[in-house]
Image (cartoon, rainbow over all chains, first blue to last red; front, side, top):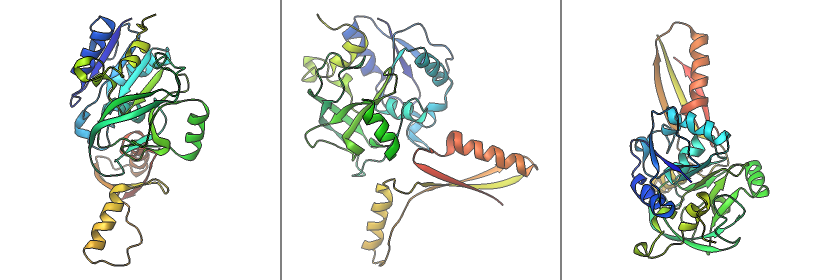
Length: 223
Length: 80
């Protein structure tokens, strides 16, 4: 399956994401610049992490209003899979493609470390390589990863199984409500997550727990 | 020309870690009796029009589309 990586000024995890997608799918993703109004025919669109537009105004706020987001919105409506990691998650929230918001970490500190994630929903296009309740390792690196949603939204996403990943075993690094680390849209085609699975995909990374997300989304799971 | 000020504040019930840290720092400076500090943003805009109604409508749209994240923030608009 084919993938695309979105590039915006200030995003800096795009190379890691391109490397991960290339290694896992055997095909290099196409790159799409922020001013593009069309996205090539792909099965997965990834918005990587970084600090788009210097995090000015709010993290992801400016990026979410760039032309490429209209194209991503249109693709998402057609059912193309969209994955946003870290700043990519913030951008998807600001664009209204996912419910809730990300705020400054409760500790007010930038956190850069490894956490444990519980796969809260394994019945999604992004997590079918895992089993429900599985605990996986993942690096995090962010200043604004404190997920928030109002009570009504929270009830909806919890009820619909839209919470895909939770910080496990007391490793919540940012104060996220209900330990939420990743959420998807109601249709299950758009996933946003703060942790960086692309940085734990091979022996050189010290583990490959993050591989399953890309293997699932690109349908390259070994039988 | 119309001068406008947009104030964006966090909604009630939304945790404000920065406000909390400022509250703590004010306490450390010896300012007693501070019940709460909430941090917000102020935008001063100059709009090249004489049409007050249009400016107000435009400012509201700007707040909804960009200046505020209405999931967590409220906004208010005042014209000079």
